[in-house]
Length: 279
Image 1 (cartoon, helix red, strand yellow):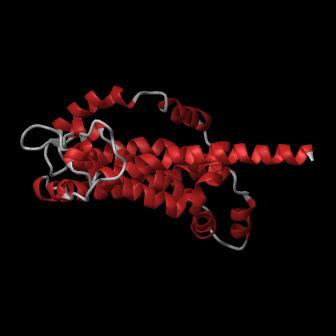
Image 2: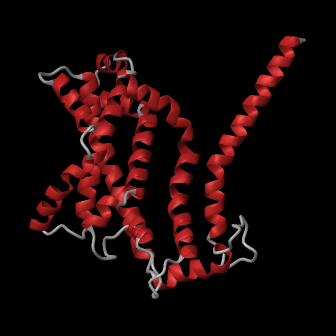
């Protein structure tokens, strides 16, 4: 009897903690959406409210009509997608090489990749800015894609290396015994098995590019190459005061794609990330 009581108490405490954590995670997203439909008067109340007293679309209208948000949205989508393709295509090969081939300097190369994770990204920005200024890449997609790609290559290589280390070598060896080349075994046997790793690296890379603001602020000067997070940071009305409802509306736009990606591919994350860091 006492044991059952303890189990029920333990379950009750667990559910309470999970409920609080769930509320802590979901409430900011809920308020972000709710506040995007609030009027300026609702947002400036002394006692904050959670739901708008009446639906106000002024923030969304201002966002679409006055800010030209479609061009930054196109920039963000294109830059994140191109970077993701580059990172996945390069890191799947480098990760496979680190996992399957023995060569001189392999250990040093792996340690060097790990070491680069401890170097602050800000340390290289001035040098990169001067370099890109010389080759006229400031305020272009190219500068952002190059910087984002080089940043994503390290994490992608480490994840893929650990993931391939978790796959038995006899998979490729069996295919090679049947007459398939090393490349054929990789493309026909290993690559399909690597789909969870590909998805995780792709989603991580895409979300990092989508939400990045520091590099984009420094290397872009006009809406031609500027991304959505920069627009959110610099959002102002013609009177010089922040348009809070428009900020919340743009925040909703920024939050939707990562949320959708995570909901679709969440089943791949836990096992793949764990496997990736084992190696």
